Each structure stands twice: as C-alpha cells, then as structure tokens.
Amino acid sequence: MIRSALWFSAYNFARPGEIRKAEWTEIDLEAAEWRIPAEKMKMRRPHIVPLARQAVRLLVDLRGPTGCGVYVFPSQRSTKGSVPMSENTVLYALRRMEFDATEMTAHGFRGMASTRLNEMGWGPDVIERQLTHVEGNKVRAAYNHAEYLAERREMMQAWADWLEGLTQE
Image (cartoon, rainbow, N blue to C red; front, side, top):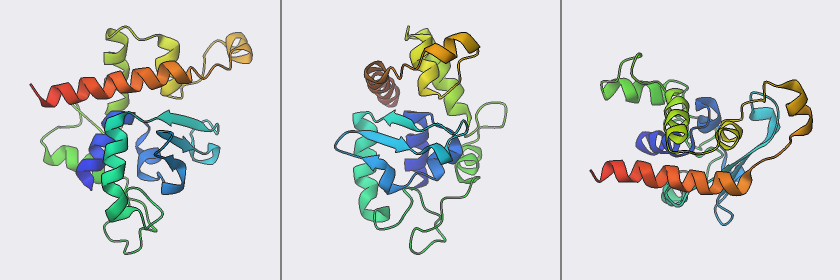
C-alpha cells in the first residue's frame, strides 16, 4: 500500500494531505477523475484531478484491499479503513529509500512535476492550475476562471507516461 501511495503521489502531485485523505467516494474510475471537495483543499476550492491510465490501474488494484473502507490509503492500524494513512508514512518510506530531506519529501513530488513539466513545454497556466495555485495577478484572477481540464488530462497522461518510461531505463 505504501508503494501505491508513493506512485499515486508521483502520478498526481497533489499535496500529501490530499493524497492520504483521498476517499473512495471522490474517485470516479470511469471518468478517470478524482474530485477533491473544497473543504479538503488548501484554498477551499473544489479541484478535479484527471487520472492517467497508470493512476486508474493503480486504483483498480487497490480497490480490493482498501475499497471497502473510506480511505484509498488507510492507516494500516485501521481495521475498517476509517482512518487515513499517517502524515509521515510517505516521508518515512522516502527516508527508507535513503532520500534525505534535501533530496526528496512527500511534498517534493509537486516541485519535481512542476519543474519537469515546464521543461517539457507544458503551459504555465495548465501546470499551475493542476497544482491548484492561485493566480498572483488579482485582476487576471478576477477574470480568468479557466480550468484547462482538457489540457490537464493530456498533460497528466504525458506525465505518467514519462514516469513509466523512467522505470524501463
């Protein structure tokens, strides 16, 4: 399960708290979307995470072991899946893989994805919307409410394909 949480973090680069508190009711495997409600988001706005094929496959595989509970990634101490994974589980897994704090953190998947997606040529607006960052220009923020969902779907699949390619090198 921890391995799946690491991969899900890499595929979706959501905030660690959003990942560990992901609930099965938020996941739509047919639509390939994770719909995070506003109350779970830092900026209190609902967020749609397009799921790449690899992320959907990971969730399908998890459905058996954790699908009867509330959380996609429940605490191993929770017999009914009613408690989310600890906030330190992914961090400790990274430390066991010998990444120190200067190399990688649970939150580091976000920076890694942003950097590489910018290098790959994806539009900054698309990347920033996926990261759920708020527009710094107040006038632009007041007028631009674009979700860039089609572009984000394409980007998330390209990102997952790139990650998958790393495992085959």
